[in-house]
Length: 168
Image (tube, rainbow, N blue to C red; front, side, top):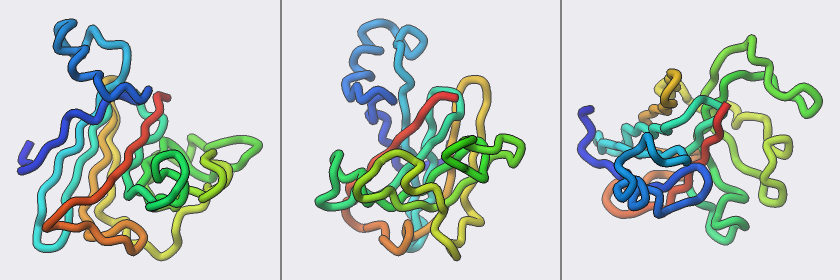
């Protein structure tokens, strides 16, 4: 799809990092019970033009930098780009699905990983290149940026990233 780099061994949304090997043995994605994900990207000047594709319905989809020293393998404290199928979250009612899909930057709380602990997007972030697309089969998050909440991508080396997704 026009991406120079691709990492398709992310595992599935249940933490099964060996999901691809299991699929290959069983004959393909349709026979696997998890939802496999692929990250594709280009480096354009100092920016990452990325696409995270989740083989599953749209509940949420996120990608970000692991927070060094953070609990749960760096999830706590991580800056992320996250797509949601609605907006206006409240702990009592959840997401308002009438508001439609949104993509924003967040920082996962350092103590509580539940969304109710960090439901407010980071203010004043340029998210104009962030988009989400969903069908009955997959969800895709696309973006073009050089940083997530001020943490810059290392475009000449390596970054420790994390991702998360949930079915609708």
